[in-house]
Image (cartoon, rainbow, N blue to C red):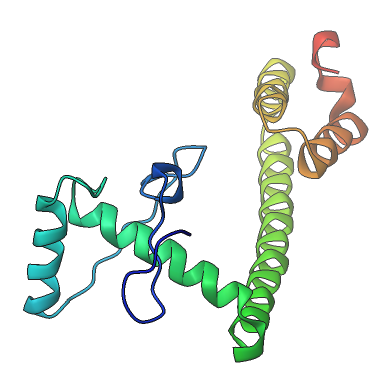
Length: 164
């Protein structure tokens, strides 16, 4: 942060300090909608009209503002927000991991059930190898290893040699 602009405010010098990408590095995004007072809308329009700001849309300003406010909250442990946000993130991570485990269990039950309902060994091989192919395309990590290990242990007799 650089030059002061009023009471306790500072303004970034470099364009890199502005954050207005709409997606993460994997292309994921979440759309939100918010109502704002008309006077804020007028201010946003004025900011966009000034060439010395790098913003091209209201969404650019809102993303940049939100990013910097959330960053401030996360760093401001004295206000309790930083700790709260870290706890919320940790809980989300735990619940996401549990959801992955439940999905894993559900998918294995479905595969076992599907295999149990067919007498055709070729169809069984197609199913298991199709699943294995998709697992190989997963990002490296715990769940990919767990799926591969389970496929090998439970359905290894159906896997093509290239699969494992």
